[in-house]
Length: 584
Image 1 (cartoon, helix red, strand yellow):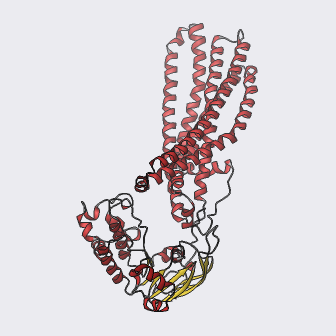
Image 2 (cartoon, one colour):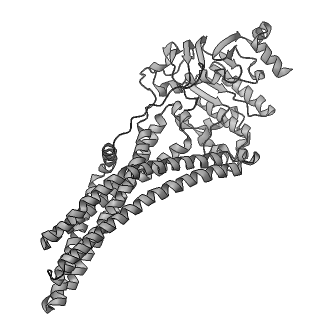
Image 3 (spheres, helix red, strand yellow):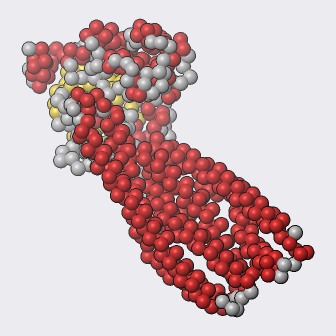
C-alpha cells in the first residue's frame, strides 16, 4: 500500500463460486421478461433437435428403405419446417440474450463507477488507475459472458442433452446405458480441472490490469519519457506484461483444448461401443437416428466443457469487480447541515499516521483559525502541510483528536455539505478533457451562467487567453488540459475556485506554475478573493505569503513557530532561516 494512504481500504473476503454467480445472475434477472423469451426460444430450439432426429429416422425408413410414395412429398416440407423453426428460435434466443448481456455490462459498470466515486482518497492512493480501469472495462465484459452467454448455453445444451438421451432411451435403453458409463468420467474430469481454470482466469485478469497500468503511465508521462529517453525502458515494461498476458492466455487455452480433446476421446469410445452393439439389431432408420443422437450429444457436451472455462474466467472477473463494489465507502453518517459557515477552524489534539509510516504525519496539533483569517503554512517538504489541509474536507479521517468548523465536529456534517464550504486550488492542477466552460463551471457549478463564468475568468486573469482560443469558452483543452500552458491551466483552476465562492479557500502552491507577470495578476485576484474569507495557503515561495495574517511553520507534523511575517523574522528562528535562504 502507498505510504500516502493513512488507512487500509477494507474489502470483503473472497466469496465462493455459488455466491458470486447468484449475485451475477441478479443483474440478468432485472430483465426477466426478455430473459424468459430467450429461455422459451431455447426450449423450442432444443426440441427441434429431437424432432429433427425423429424426422431423419422417418426419412430413412419410409423414404429410402420402404420408399413409401405417400410420405415422400411430405418429408421435405417437414424437414424445412423444422429447420425454419430452429433458425427462428436460434435468432430470438441469441438476440434476446445479447440484449440482456449488454444491459448487464452497462449496469455493472454504472454500479461499479458509482461505488468508485464514493470511495475514500486512501483507496486511490493504494490502487493504480490502470487496475481500476481494467476492472470497469475488461472484467465487466468477462462477467457479462458468465451471466448471460453461459446461462444461455447451459440451458440450450442441457435441454439438448436431455432431449437426445430421452430419444436414445426410447430407441434402446440398454444401448443408452453405454453413454451413462462415460458421463461420470467426463463429470469427474471437468470437476478436477475447475480450480486450474479459475486460477488461470484470475491470472489473466491480473495481467490485463498490469498491462492497462503500464500503457496509461507511458501515455500520460510522454514528456518525461521523451526527455529522459525512457522509450526503451517503457517498451521493456510493456513487453514484460504483454508476455505475461500471452503466457496466461495460452495456459488457459491449453486447459480448454485438453478438456475438448478428452471429451471427444470419451465420446469416440462411446460411439465405437454403440456401433459394435447396434450392427444387425437396428433398422437403418433407428441406427441413423441413434448415431445422429450420439453425434449431436458431442457438440453440447463440448460446449458445456468450454463453458466451464468461460464461467471460471467470468467468476474471477466477478470477484475482481465485486471486490471493488464491496470496498468500504467514505463514512458519511453526519447529519448536520450548515448553509454557509463563517469559517472558524479549530484543530484539537489532532494526530494522524499513514499506514506503514515510522512516525506520525501530524502530531498532537492544536490551533485555531478565526473567520476571515489568512493562514499560511510553510516548512520543508514532508512536514505535514498538505496532510493538514486534507483533513478539512475529510479526504482523510482524523485518527485522534477533532477538527472543528464553526464549533461543529466535521465528522458530524454530511460530506456534501462539508465540502461545499471549501474551494481548492492545488499545484497539481486537475482539468478534464472537456471545454473551458465545463472545466470552470464544474460539478455543482454546472448551472452557472456564461456571464458568471466570464466574470470568474476575468478575476483569475484567464479571460484574455480564453478569448484567443479558437472557440473561446467552448474550446476543448485536451487530456488534463494538455493544449494549455502551465500558467493557463493554473488560472482556469483559480477561476473555478472563484466561481464557487466558497467561504473557505484552500490554496496549495496556487501560483507555482505562473510566470512573474501572471503571478502578479493572479496574486492580486487571490488577495481580493480572500477578503472576508478564511484562507489556508501552503507556500514554498515565501514572497507570496508575506501579507498573511499568521504564518505557521511546520516540521515533522508539528507547528514549531507561529506569527506574522515581521514577528517571525524578528524571532530569528526556522522561518527567518528559510526566508534568508530564499532571498540571499
